[in-house]
Image (cartoon, rainbow, N blue to C red; front, side):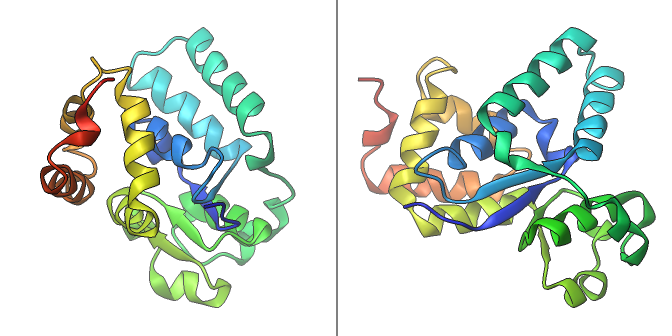
Amino acid sequence: MTSGYQVILDACVLVNAALRDTLLRLAEPPHLFLPRWSDDIIVEVRRTLQQKMGCTPAQTRHLEGHLRIHFEEAWVEGYEPLIPAMANHVKDRHVLAAAVKTGAQTIVTFNLKDFKKEALRPWDVQAQSPDAFLVDQYYLDPSLVLTKLQQQSQLHSGAIDRLLTIHEKSVPKFVELVRSHLVGDGGKHDRTD
């Protein structure tokens, strides 16, 4: 499946390494959605990673470099003139402006309170938690999602359950859904061969 569905990934979603990896794997061909972000979003990611998570400037530059190489089409530009027209929380108006500029239908964020429906409705944009978003992606193509999770799990001792344990706190409904699928298929996706 390849989709033209554009999604803004907010900074709060991109700072979580495991969640970022899962989302970006789903955005690699064959992709379920097209990720979008702005320089302002990446500045927030850098600041949070350095100030709250102990990453060095070199580490955040490395991350940004990889994002620019592997997702060069993700960068939204020219959204700044739209910021004053946005009616959501002032600190996140740049995020909605980037969504409007690129035609993104969804903003994936943990900060749903900053994106009230009445502020999004005029722009035909919705805000979703990463949990709800990943559940939707699963239902679009369960096999593809499970395959990409298996690929990612190779970084975590080869067991998909280890990756799901890492995800439990941030995307619990998605984890429950994937686990129920794995139990239903006898755990065949949990093999490392």
